[in-house]
Length: 403
Image (cartoon, rainbow, N blue to C red):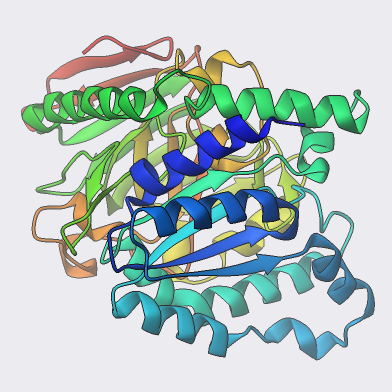
């Protein structure tokens, strides 16, 4: 098991760099029940920097499975609207939020895909007002991870549980820089490097990105007045936070109708407790018109059919193959980590702050109940930037930045 000093260091990073909790601010924490010890350390750090109140909410994989094993069919069309509304109200009044991930990646494997899809749609609809405050950066927020036994067993299936947990913790601490002597300074330096990369890309004003690799020949048209974002972000409340720990990406907004070609996933996607492997899709005029997967295809198709915008892109992100997460050589089966090991695209909702002046569908921004990232980059994928004049500018070669 991870030492308390190391766990305390991760909690400190989450409070001071991730969320950047301010004096007098309420902090809401959403976490797996296994992560209780980390939540306690986060609470201690939050109160030390002046938080007015820390409110934890816990979720339990056992309870999730119990629903699918025992509940009436009608249960899967319900979601706790009252809970999401309460959190939304608190966020709108100035609270910050920290999410801790670590659920069993395959907790719902083998259950009825139609029920899983119904549950996910009900949750997405109920949570949308709350999530809009987060995705628009109305408030400061962040996401960190805890190495739960179930997650560790999924990543290291050939090891006994104690060894698997130890290995996963080592990978988490390395990726989040929590194993450094001064992790807070290390994160500030890294955030500055990501900002430099964003400034370079913003200066280019590309019209589109062209991804080429095995099974991939995809042109992603970028929205007019797009903005590249990465690392630390200033929320609308004026507080600078670092939304994902770890983070290695720079990302921007595609135009919802300017995506064409084929693309194949380079890593599995875990969504809603189900593993989806070997995703391959074809886009025409921004919309997925063909979708396949060797495993979890019905779940993926259900995801794409959530609403009209679920079959279109809301984000495109570039991540170097040399990122610390990629260098670990692991497939984490958790998007927080896997999206920081490879360039990726996201189906669904666009982030308004990735376009100057924001914008809705009339400007080309996508809208949806969902926002789901999946990985398309690797050391076999090249990326070019296409200028408005049609010039081709190399951006990445074999997964490495060359711009």
